[in-house]
Figure 1 (cartoon, rainbow, N blue to C red):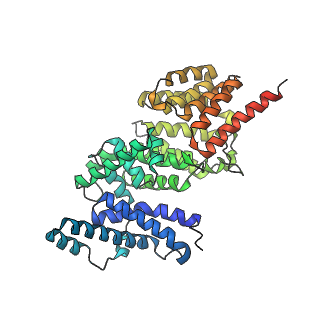
Figure 2: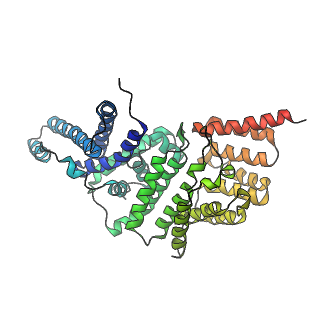
Figure 3: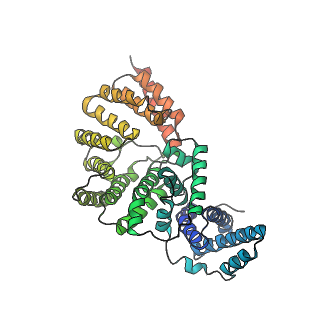
Length: 419
């Protein structure tokens, strides 16, 4: 009986998906159809590998299956259009002997990343498409990252695929000038992929390490391509300094452990050291960007041997500078936490009231979660419980929901035991 794929094979398929998609697009130049073909190949693998075993060259296997699906698709399209010249061209292109092995010689993921961030697309569409094609995120996960409804995001991704096809963009690494035009979108999408891996917004898992590791791998590749770009170095530093804490974020029963209660001896010191080195080099270049500032904040946290040793005034100053650079409500949210740690919870709550009218955060669980935390700091347990529960009802992450409900239950129990 088919027992399904094991965890290792599932991770392998996720890692290979963007590489296979890149190979198929490079050969057939049809983004939407290629993505469908790759999905069919992944489904075939999920059905066949548990009983037949993982092939010696799984990427070549997936490419071969996807090529066959694309062959069928193109032939069907040609037949439907009834164009003899098109038939001749397609049959020449789709010669029976497809050497899938040769297609696996290069990893096309970085090319695919820059292709998805083509200037023919709006920035938001480019990022959404890349998250889908390269990051492997679901439409729901991408919608959460953008704070928009899932249906809206589905339409955005569909339009982006059509635009890529209509643009006729060649599948190759862009020139240095083209890279400069697309770099901001590329870095943002890598940032979002990492965030979704480090703290999954949907489903039963707190972390999806395959996503955060892939984001780090791709950012390293971009850094190798552009070693003198300070923001590329800053982003890689941010990822490493943040990812260094991964092993300490979950307890033995998969419960969420917040930063102040983490066992800091579990933090990966080699990643922290590499991140600090990268950040120091990036800051020395003289052009300070948002990723470098976020990396600096992460470094301040990482360099504190105990939670009580955290230099909150420095973190607050960095968030204030970051807010002047970025109109991002999440920055204000984090600034409110830092302000509360420096000036007391009333100051943090005052900053949160400004965000109540920000439509981008309307109904978002993080606003209620932070408010609950600050109300608890202020001693208003009853209202804190209310907002912990509201936040738990709004999050789509099961571990986060469980954590928030646990916080509410803890305060309720404490109140019940009070004299």
